[in-house]
Image 1 (cartoon, rainbow, N blue to C red):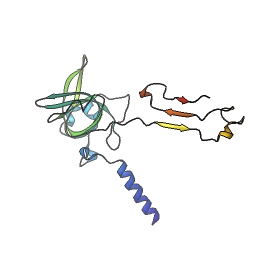
Image 2 (tube, helix red, strand yellow):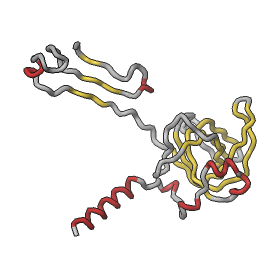
Image 3 (tube, rainbow, N blue to C red):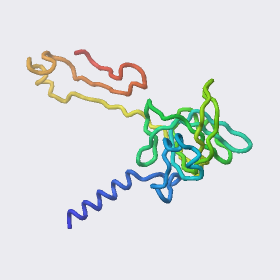
Image 4 (spheres, rainbow, N blue to C red):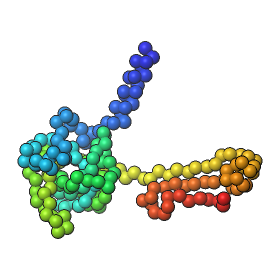
Amino acid sequence: MKQLWLMGLAALFLGACSSVPDELEVVDEASLVSYKNALEQPEQYIGQPARWGGMIAAVRNTDAGTEIEVVHLELQGWGRPVPSDQSDGRFRAKLAGFVDPMVYKEGRYITFTGTIAAAETGMIDEYNYLFPVLNASGKYLWPIQKEKTQVEVDYSSLWYRHYYFSRPHYPGPVIIRNTQGASEGGSGQSDKGNN
């Protein structure tokens, strides 16, 4: 009985961790067309459902609606794009109404659900490009995640650190390292105190 209870709790926990936001839910996950398939054979999948996401490259508002150009990235189980230096290409998401480009800024992560429309030709700089198009029925702009800071402290006793066999083999202060992602500049580590 205890094992059954633990298995149920684990399934509930895993289900909660991988749940898709309400805006991105679809009736049949298995029917979703992948970006790669739509890119290779765009005419074959017109009208079929898809969930694509990535990084916003451009936002264009017109009286007819909004077009968001997205650098496609693979999605995690709950729909969030996986940050990566690799992409299969770009797509355009078409939305009814206005989207503020100050909120939907270039570089933010976004995911769409909708139906695949006819591909469109366009330009990326001076390069002719065929964009898969998604008529979006749902969208989710992912919150900005701040880099986590990790602080490491040497908790060995002061008395022990004064012995020859202690690290780094001579007396020294407590070492504190503040490790941050390389995206914030610098080497990612800074030592406080002298060794």
